[in-house]
Image (cartoon, rainbow, N blue to C red; front, side):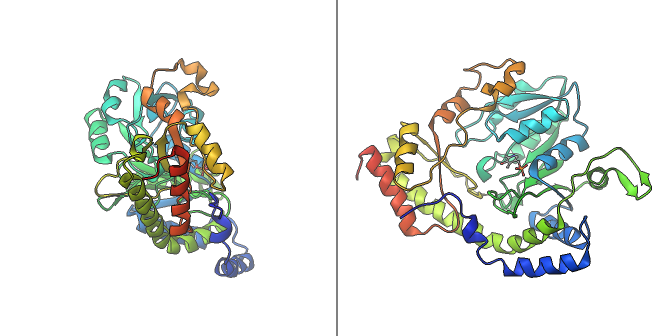
Length: 372
Ligand SMILES: *Cc1c(COP(=O)(O)O)cnc(C)c1O
């Protein structure tokens, strides 16, 4: 038995419907924006419960556009967790602003007890991440931001389908940014993304900026960029969006089963830490992460036994070479640093089954030598 991390060949094994619709696109010759991009924008806005969605060509661009829309630029600071994928901070730096890192909590989310002490006169925005497809307490985060009149932009790149009491990730702040990268919950055959907002002015600005700032062919309102989603990918996204509720339901039930195997083994509990799952929070399990002892050995052991375990990520952002100019040092964010040494990501996708989950569990038990 092999437990693969990459489920894409299975997910796209039968793509006839997508290919059929691609034929219509090819016949139309409508290759920039056009009807399919408009259609997926409407469907996505409805799915997350935002007033507007604007389709862009990846999650990094979505973050850039979102931060640019609220006016983030040189001389300003953006508070963001130190354990995200590089693009969250990359977008801040690309706009000439300064990332101010925040430590994380035991659920790997931005630590809301630490945010207020990081706010300065230069702070423009808080940029939380729905890391792994779980969410920080967004209601509390928005309260903190409101208290200091700060904007909230959400990195919901892994959070398409995550909700807090029914409200979608990406819809708590001013603008939400999402990715359709192949290993996100809603994925395409390459790159894609969205920004969402319920504010008409931000919508209009982002929509225009996404397409060179053009009002029409002969007039521009501002100097914008090209962040357009490809119609080919809009078609893929439309078909995947129909399947997403079923995918998420299966992932959640796998994660729940696996959590319960681990939590019910009292010997394993000392060596393997399952993060708390908050009541009312639906997660996407884009990453199923545990904190384990002897992590590097365990990854090697599992990989040697046909289980494609991975690490997201071994070095937090503030300790990356790219952050040298910011002056952080080891010890600044002890929780994130400890997690970076202990985190392991296991496959938890929709194509697993009970036998594969049991197989992973047995190998964890064997590694720690702790049969119950
Ligand atoms: C994937 C990801 C991004 C970047 O999205 P791309 O579509 O790959 O550009 C940004 N932030 C987080 C948290 C992500 O997981």
